[in-house]
Amino acid sequence: MARTNGVMRNLLDGQLRGSDGVDIGRVADVEAEWDPDGRLVLRRLWCGPDALARRVSSRLARRLGSITRGRFDRSIPVEEIESIGDLVITLRGPSDRYEVGRSERWLAHRLTRLLPGARR
Amino acid sequence: MTSAAGAYRSPFRKAWRRLDPRLALRLSLGVLTAIGGFLDVGAIATAGEAGARFRLGLVWAFVLGTVAIVVLLMMVGRFTAATGKPYAAAVREHLGFKFYLIPLTAEVVTNSVMLAAELGGVAIAMSMLTGASSALLFPLGAAAVLAMTWWAPFSWIEDGPAILGLVTLCFVVAVVVQGGPPPDTWSTLVRPDLQPGDLVHYLFLAAAILGAIISPYLIYFYSSGALEQGWTRRSLHLNQVTAVTGMSFGCLVAVGVVMTAAIALAPRHLEVTSLPQVSLTLVKPWARLGGYLFATSLLVTCFGAALEIALTLPFEIAQGFGWSSGKDKPKRRAMRFNLTILAVVVVAVAIGSTGVDPLQLALYASALTALILPCSIVPFLIVMNDRDYLGDQVNGRVANILTVGVVALASLVALVTLPLTLLSGGG
Image (cartoon, rainbow over all chains, first blue to last red; front, side, top):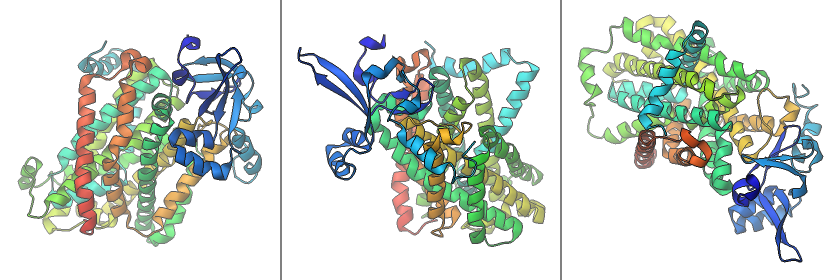
């Protein structure tokens, strides 16, 4: 059903979930490309501060972009999508396979030892 | 299609039909926890001041606010059970990221100030119990709140302070043992006794009361709690019955605070300028014991509300951004969520350290909540009326009109009176 529905309604702001059931983020932007046959093809799902800022205003996007320079934005190729249902986009691989949500692992790696009770 | 009236009658009827002893036990437990969870520093501050200045003249605002929050909680319960999604996620999915920023900003601002007020209330209560300075106890109270949000499982945070919160029933008992408010005050219930120049403050308090009772954080907390406990359509009716009954009893306690203030403070023309002054409401009937009872009530309600706010805001942020979240997950699996808890408490401690009296902070935070209530509630109403999302669980007309009416009233009154009160230098 979702395959025939609109991109805006079913992909944008949808919950990205690894095959292990762990939530990693929400889709901030969708990248599409005209292929040589003249068809518009979806390529990647984008997450990150710059993609989000573009959703809010172009001025904010420029300001933020001059600082972040896209360093914190991550994408997932659409081929990795296993299923889309009810605004939950389930991916083929486990959550730690993807760049999106890497901050979670980065924080866990750096801070687990520092914070009491975090090792559990 | 359910009509609005049908939607609201059916939970009671169904629960009643299926009532068995085990269910009755859960029901009464749920009601108990809801009573305890109703009061917070905003409710105590506004109720104390309302009773002292206008006797029973603002009871209507508590009743109106309670009706609105009950309707809203029933909505969000229905939403979460029907879709299996938390409310914050729905706002972003349904209305987009840009729109989601509006309720998010509103919630971050009001909840940070309110959390600071709750932490201040905790410090004052501890100081009343121990005699130590509340400025010294403030970081201690904040550390206790942080420790509890960090280590305790969700069910403790939900039920623990709430069950202890039953001590607040002492306000109702105090009204009863004193034979109720003096006969001449009853007339203020319908005809408030306003002196010239009182109108702005009266309306300001009315807005603050509505903001204190219809706290959006309660709606988010309820939604996250429903999700954490895995509500389904089956459990929905029971939980709604408990929410309604509990909130109504909670309102009774708040009105109890108003009445004790009308009995103890109004005749002496005592203006309430700080939280310890509100303790006179219980000191009158019970002397020293009353002071301790008040301090305990304040401690438990502020502590409980602080826990709820310190968890709700991170839940809201994490759900909106799609992060892994949950109180009962291993911390390293939901690090962004857990660090947000830390950040929220740190910000509130910073606000509380400015030295503004918690009572004033609570009054202004409540009025501010009332002012920006539409930012939190309107997106919710839009989602609640979407048939694609909710199917037959969409709102009825009565619920829509009632919510819009109360929210608009609270916001307009706050819009007019908040600047005037700030200009005149407060209460």
